[in-house]
Structures are given as structure tokens and as C-alpha cells.
Amino acid sequence: MRIDKSPAIIGSMFDRIAPTYDLLNAALSFSMDSRWRKTVISSLNIKDGDKVLDIATGTGDMAFRACRTAGCTVTSMDISRRMLDIAARKNKSSRGSFLITAGDAIAMPFSDETFDHAMTAFGIRNMPDLSAFLDEAFRILKDGGKMAVLELSVPSRFPWRWIYLTYFKTILPIIGGLVSGDFKAYRYLRDSVMGFPPPGELERLMEERGFEITQSSPLFFEIAHIYLLKKVAAEV
Image (cartoon, rainbow, N blue to C red; front, side):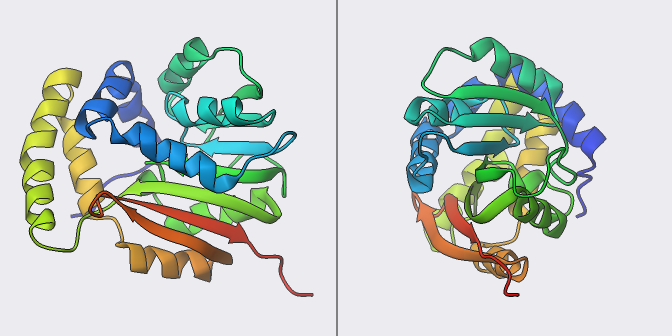
């Protein structure tokens, strides 16, 4: 089944669920999402003075964590303005600087080689064109820059695959729909994960777009995955 991931559709959907987004993220992941974001930030080894882009930032949780880690500048970009409004209200003083930009990850409003690091949590799955997104991420990173990707995945082994699919296909859409009042959005979540490329296929695409994969790690029985990529300078 083909899913419509056009910017207008995705932006509108996340605008609708923005008020309950944080609550449901924690509830539906049994609060593991916070630990996973911490792992992402640690993997980037962010230093004072670094420029960091948080793509599909949502309500800014990972960006704020980066700001608390070092005296860096974090730009939070999302296509949903209501998500960004919540991020702005949540912002508190920290070691680093926090900036907000509304934008489409397929056509980012930044110059070439602007950022030392990029990161995205549960965002790459929503891109209408994975190759175009990876090309944009490659473009805005400095040579040697790193990007960390955190995304949901489907376990490959029994019995975890069966347990996960039972929960993900039936229970999660009901809970998400009841709490948010938007059943369609949480059916989309289910379908987008089920239709997303498995780790091996995604890794091949990342390498084809010029990235070196320095880490690829499953999390909690493979229900999520972290990819750490490095922009390799082109040979002259």
C-alpha cells in the first residue's frame, strides 16, 4: 500500500497530534524513547562551538538534550509549526543555543556544509523520498560531519516479531487514537513502520548516497535502530 507522505499531509497530521505527542511517545515506547535519544546524543560526541541540526525535531526533546550536553548551537527544524510552537514553549536555559526553523527536509533552507552534526529521531520514516533526504543531509554537513538516525524497526526473530506485530498492529493504533483523538494518524504510524526499509536495505541506500556507516545498532529486541553516518569527502 502506498502512503501519501507529501509535506502538506505530513505537516497537517503532526499539527493535529502535537498536543499529545510527548505523552504518547513515552507511553507507547514504555519511556524507552528518552533513553534512545540519550544514546543518539552520546554517539555524536558534540563539542563546544559545534553547529547541530535536529531534523524533524518534533517538540525538541533531542535538541534540548544536545544543548545541555555542550556549548553548541542547535537548530531545530520541522515541517509542523504546531510542533515547533510547543518546542519554543518548552525551551529552557542551557549550555548551548537553541534556534527554530520551519522547513522541509527534502529542501533544507541552509547553505552547503553548514553543520558539524545532524540528527533525526523517528523522522526519516516520514520522508517522501529517502534518497533526496540523504542527499540534502549530505549537502548541509561539513566534510567529516556526522549524522545520527534513530528510527523504529520491525524485529526479525520469533517470538519478538510476533509479540511486536500484535502490539503494533492492533493495540498501538487504538491507544494512540483514543488519547490523541486522531485514529488516522496512528494507523499511519503503524503503516509507515511496516512499509519502511529494513536496516540492511537502508544501510545500502545510505552508502549509495555517499555516507560511511560507522555504527548500526538494534535497540531492545530490534524494535528501534540507531545508524551513525559520516560524510566522506569526495576524492578530487
